[in-house]
Length: 409
Image (tube, rainbow, N blue to C red; front, side, top):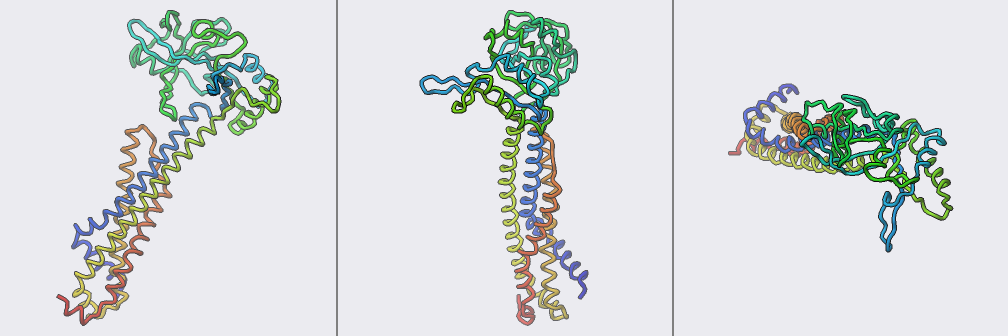
């Protein structure tokens, strides 16, 4: 008997029991669908993390001041001002691997425009900040060096702040807003950045010259910088070198002996990004493992149905053998049925998985990244499940004694 005839008989048998065939494929469908959806959503989450950190600047290094210690309780880095304005100037001047430096002085303030107000994050910084963060303006212009030199009351608003104070389609350029009782002139609207990797709205922010911030918002500390220093390396591959150079420079400037710990902290954004991505990958692999277990369970379901099918069709098997079919033909027929059911479930699972991933990604506003490798593995694993779990019922069918089969009722 030709293989094509055997396959035709197997497919005809599946078609004549459409509901049973559909229910048999459900286990594989769910397993493959879960695998595709999980890997696509996980890859999308990873891309979202990469985009979030790219928007912060992949070549950035953050220098934080030291820690307080009262009664054995440490306040953490940033709780004691140990960085000076001269430190900032020295990092810019003395380190060849550094491209730009900007201070970051932060406070939560209430911004008032007319009869509207909104509490937001205010950053005192320099013009280099927007270049380092790759943060263009949609309207107006960023802070200028002249604003810093004159401690001008100039302010750049984030898009969320604009929406809250003026509405989505307003143009507040040249308008006056108040921070507390201090009036500020709106000079620019920062382009929309979206959410950070930890869910913070980056557009819910405002920016003023750091000299203005020190004088009118938070008060200065003289020679000490009351905030952090943002440093841009010449390239993302130089961040480790920049970290080491900054640490050596600041230890020397702060006259720290070898036995003393740093009174500052240097963080590389790429390390944080790598930790976020590793966490996402670990969770994706864990969930994918669960999906693979679902595939195995689906394979067991196929084996059960095929065993029932062999019992139900014992007389049919006996007639085919009596008409000249060889045991290998019977084995091939049932093996093809199991393989076709499994692969069909896999193909339907891919469609359902992609649709599920697209739906979840749309709700979370994440990109969707369907992995070709995951699709290939799903098809291959579906076929393997069909062969492995269909082989025993197929061998049992091929070993049926034709005389006993013809007597079977």
